[in-house]
Amino acid sequence: MTVVMQRYVLRLFMSIKYITANVMDRNNGRIVASASTVEHALKDGFECGRAGNAKAAAAVGEVLAMRLKVEGLHQGLGRGIHADVNKEIQKMGLKNSTKVWALVNALKNNGVKLVLTDGSDSGPSP
Image (cartoon, rainbow, N blue to C red; front, side, top):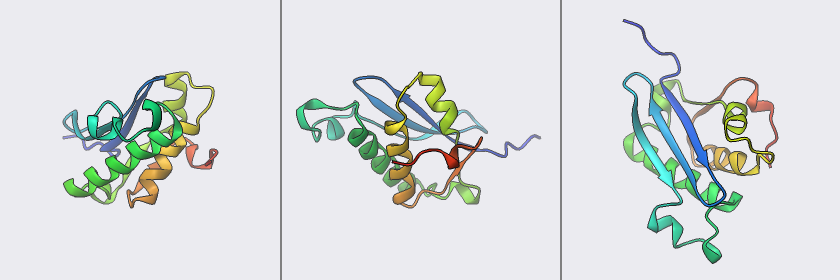
């Protein structure tokens, strides 16, 4: 039986209009917590419907952090939740990483234990 060392992984999906963040359990392929600007509760709180900017990303991070705490997973069962920020930025082809870092910082500021991999912990932190 193989145990995945990076069991919980943060995955991001960003477009001009929407931001979605999922935490996946790599042992069984399930999404254990999710937050998105598509949700009415979040979407209605943004000024002028701006659900794709850094403020919206931070709000998604805060909601995801709350949901992880409710599930008891904000500490990633001791090992943390792994995030490869550089990979996420490259995957989306973003020229500006402000939204990604806003979401990551919101998670950290709300008590989520993040393990930044692949050198992304030395990245810009607006």
